[in-house]
Image 1 (cartoon, rainbow, N blue to C red):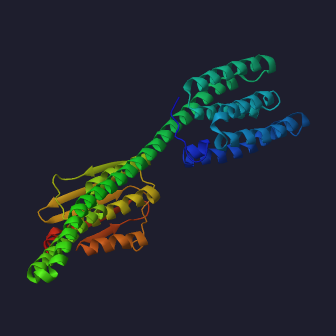
Image 2 (cartoon, rainbow, N blue to C red; image 1 turned 180 degrees about the vertical axis):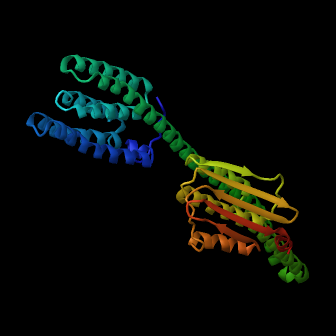
Image 3 (cartoon, rainbow, N blue to C red; image 1 turned 180 degrees about the horizontal axis):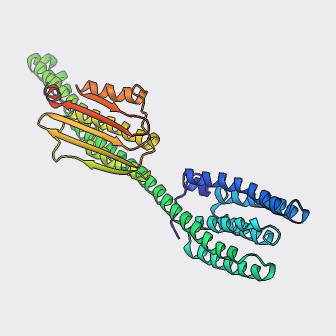
Length: 378
């Protein structure tokens, strides 16, 4: 059986983070009920013999259908089988009940066990053959039970398997980020402990020595306090460097995180990066944040199927192009874009956006590394 990640809701929609395709299935299957009543009415006219059992079947179907999508996963099979059973009971008086059988079989594929769904499809086909003998249902309908059930089931089976793998990948991505954050915090904790433990002990010892020498040897006491000042300034610089390591972005790590996010959303991600970027710390931090914002926009809003990041380095000229084939229409002055422009401006770069409606989005970032290098040297 396909492994099913547990989400906040123990239901099909909850476990798959409510994919849009499943929501559309609920809508379409609800509208199908109109044909269930309209078709026999137009062919036979109104008659209580078919109308009453049809009307009674509708609330049962709706309850079972909602149970498939929103109810506990352990009851999915029973709800799907109940829909198939209602279809066979209603079939002798309403030929459109064939839809109940086909829908029930396709919903059964959401359960994830291939054997269960295929076995039920074969059993339903055999029952339909018996119905052909007992109630003279058209033989073509018997074939439709097998063909439609298999085709619809294959589609749902493959889709749910893919959606569940995506959900597992999202969980893995979150776990990777959590572990990376934890490891970074532990690194900073170790660095601060190593830096401050020894240095504070040294400052304490020299301060005590200066206090004892303050009256007996003022000149030496002054030298000791100057040494304390020097050590304190040096330690402050090291602490700032360690804390900067917590805040500084890593462009390579951000690309890995971007791949995890986009591929979990079904978006193909292509990266072209030269070897040995060797970017200044301030530039790399800003570029990482801009990349993160751009990838988040693609993930949430673009409806793209392919995204690409191309990074080039020609001497001191650096460029990064981020493209997607989504819906485009990115606002040139939205909050997210304004933040990206501000970060690029701070490192002396430039940002150009081309986002025509329904033609994807392109972000071009250009940067001369000379100002950044001089800034870091200063």
